[in-house]
Length: 150
View: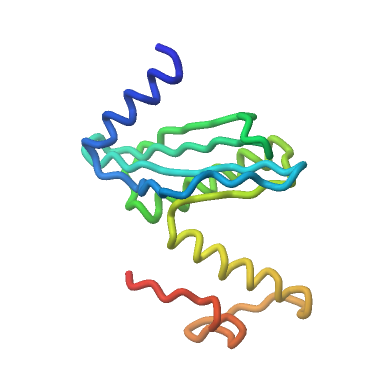
């Protein structure tokens, strides 16, 4: 069975199981020249007890560069599955030596959390040392902080 047939089969099977996937109607937008875009996603198969993750890398013309999928023997909750998919993809891309990357996910909570983390990372430009906040977020996060009811 070729990769396209395998993908079609998995798409048909996916509808039978709860999935972390929510297809976005937006079209793929290319990265800047010299950069790659990596789309990351996860699917949770509760009945069989596993999570599937997938990543595809394309250039600024939308041409395929590489792809990877992985089956994990745990049926995570969708939010955790999406986070693990991103973590595994980051490790994969780092091991490949890519540095100019844009990561895209359809998991809104994960994307919003990354925006908050990015704000924290940018503040290190004007601070020194390690800062650890508990219970109350620093003032500079209030504009970007997404409160998520768990």
